[in-house]
Length: 380
Image 1 (cartoon, one colour):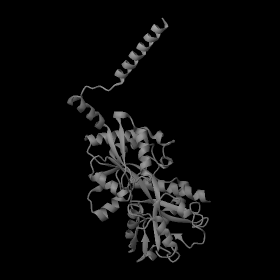
Image 2 (cartoon, helix red, strand yellow; image 1 turned 90 degrees about the vertical axis):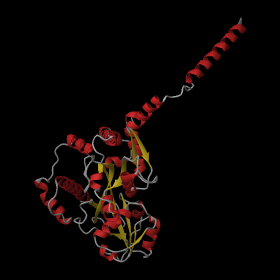
Image 3 (cartoon, helix red, strand yellow; image 1 turned 120 degrees about the vertical axis):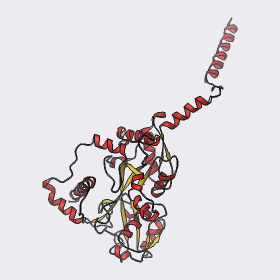
Image 4 (tube, one colour; image 1 turned 90 degrees about the horizontal axis):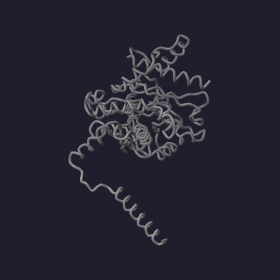
């Protein structure tokens, strides 16, 4: 009897195993052309290509954050791509199939306008959002007191493709300074600067740069200050380096005025109604709707520096983003309160700001003033 029961149990287990295997086995039925067409349409309908940058940079981290926050299966799928960086990304946005959105920086238009001679960029590429700022650092040797002293001298912008190779030449060109460009890696450039073999190195990165913050006191190296913002406020915002950032290079209480280069999440300006436009519109709506996901871990802390309504000098906001900003933002002040008028005048005078301005420029000016004012209070 026991043997019979054991035998029956073995038979039942074998039957269950076979049934499970059959249930889990993939269907051998070949898909029909019609079913494949449906699958292809679903996969492509709301999938968007996002171009980031080189693996060791920040762009891929931010792209991964976007992919994770916005993922909604076939309703919204973001495919991040590694790429070369700011200038190459804009070129891919213009010409490469599959690239719908890309990380770049605000002065890339100026580079493409003056060096590449590409027409109508502002109508072909828009921005969805202005992201974090990076500061221009021009570290010079003891004999270089101003930008004018760089004339005819050797200046290193770091390795090819990094942000300084885009921003540095624009700054020097606008100042009318002719120089000898070098593209040394950052460590080699700094060592040659210490030995007096080159006049300056240029970096464009968020402060403080650890390598420079650790320089010993008394090295004779120092940062060059931008001579007023009038030449640059069409594409850059105001930046500042202080003693808290570089205690061995800047004396306590002193500041070095520089420029900030906004990072930009850019999109091709497809006509409304186009399939690409519909994907970008949904992508933009989801970025704003799920903004809270970018403010906590595991997302990069850099997202906490971002104001989604901030403007980018010289750029036009993507229409879907503009509608969201207008519908959600309260009325913003465009002029300082009377109690701060004296400080505002000081700010305007120090930065050589004059002339008529658009509403967007006035709003940006006021935000820059508020940032400047908060830094003044923080230093006192």
